[in-house]
Image (cartoon, rainbow, N blue to C red; front, side, top):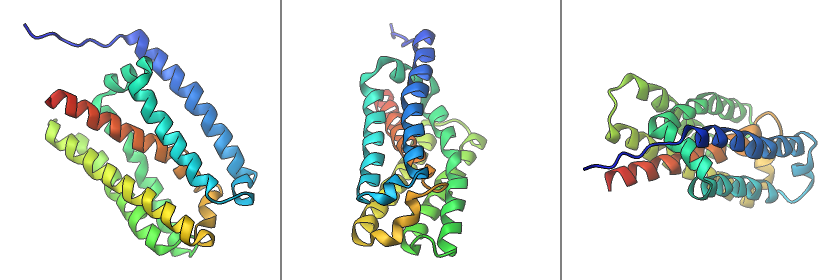
Length: 199
């Protein structure tokens, strides 16, 4: 007899509260530091380090905090995919900054157009029949864009910090500070769920 895995809805609610309080507090502090120019005034490598720590922290919370795990499982790969529609306005922001000369075009062409692809695919996903292969394909493509965009940003920030100076400032700083950790963690959570289900 097949055992059905049920999700405790109390744990799901606790997961929402935990996420809102913990990640919300981080987001407020990080955005405030950006707004007050702290990231610009100190070593520019601190900014990508903060983004990396937030991404790793969220990912680890999926694996080790039961309420966050329940929340992610309750949303499932499709629910987690819906979040990524936000990457369309993120892409438009990057493209605008690039064509104004405020961000290097190498970064804009990779991160901007990659985010546009991921965002459009996330929106299109809900017009297609539900299939594990389709949603897995989206998360693989979206995560590949995530790795390329973050990697390009880190390399350019290290090699040409002045070219990436504007990404430390609002409003565009909200994308790496808040959107990037959520994007990375939700892709990993979704791919893990799909892998476990397949196995």
